[in-house]
Amino acid sequence: MSNIEAHTVAYVRDTMLPEQTPPITEKGAVKWLRENLFSGWLNSVLTVLSLLVIWWALAAIGPWLLNTIWNAGSLRECREILDGTPGACFAVINDRWHQLLFGFYPSQHYWRPTLAFVLLLASLAPVLFTNLPRKLLYVSAAYPFVAYHLLWGGSIWLPVSAALGFVAGFVAFVFARRVNGLLAVFAAVLAPIFWWLFLAQPFNAGLSSVLPIGLEFVRSDRFGGFLISLVIGVTGISLSLPLGILLALGRQSDMVFVKSVCVIFIEFIRGVPLITLLFTASLLLNYFLPPGTSFDLILRVIIMVTLFAAAYMAEVIRGGLAALPRGQYEAADALGLDYWKAQRLIIMPQALKISIPGIVNTFIGLFKDTTLVVFIGLLDPIGLSNAIRADTDWNGIYWELFIFIGALFFLFCFGISRYSMYLERKLKTDHR
Image (cartoon, rainbow, N blue to C red; front, side, top):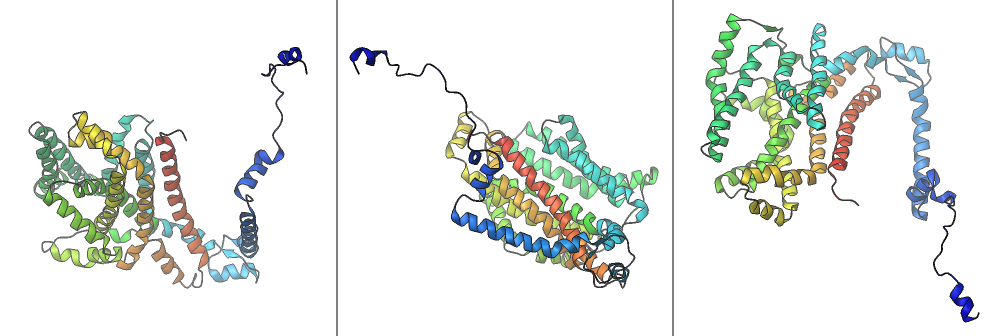
């Protein structure tokens, strides 16, 4: 090639090549299968073995599930309809669903726990999704008192007097904050306690005698099934997170007394099984109360479950605080923020973001642990399944009850886990 020809050849392309379709192995379902199930010989072998196990399980369980009886009055009637062929007798669910959901709650008042559950979803919405109007948080704040009145009934002035204790704490905090921040915290704690111990009962009794407004009272021993699991689980989850945050901050405090109390509490609770705490709530707690004091068993269980979950939550959050770089604390100091503003605006949001998987794991474990209340005489879904199987009509039934109970627990726990994944994606700030 001559020098003239060499200088006329372009080294940079002046036209683009036409687009070509990717190979079949680099798009669609084939690409996903190749990357996730058949990426190597070991993964390919494991995939084939897994498919064989799934096929064997479906071949064994499929005919039993497909041949299902939903309408029958007893297990014997189910077997007569099946006439020797394998099949599931889900007629027990059709016959006892109300008992599994509501326990022994009066049937004429089923609308009350149903309405409480609907209001629970409405009150959780502004807490879980920040794009909703913030004024809806007033609904969330009022929900615990409304739900208590719906579920237990009685005088409407009892939840009102309980709510006024929090109002007293807020007012005390606002006035004490002008003097000192630490004094405001103590005032916010002591004012509600003073109200509940000395003023709430006269307030409730006085208004109840003048305006006897309320719903029919339902005793706690009528609660059962998923109703009691939701009451204990939702209350424990809601209260354990703020308590866990306070315990985690107290454990890292420079004040020796506060740190010692938090460390002793956390290590003691984490070193004792939950079932022991439940027996303590059921049998021993009344011995420490004044004679004649009536303390609701479900309320005692809620307190113990909340304290148990708060101790574990404190360690999860403490891990998130420990994972933060020291520069974040120094940045808060450089901005001139005091301790509480630094925690609220800089430190705690980042620590909670890091701790989301551990927090959700604790929530799910707490909700499933509500089944342990069967050991202290509260009939959760597992306890009611045993009572149903003890009936002569359904004596011998087994899998159908536990499949239904497991499906409901899975529905709630799966929803919690999916929300945590949504929250992680929403709070993700890196661009990887």
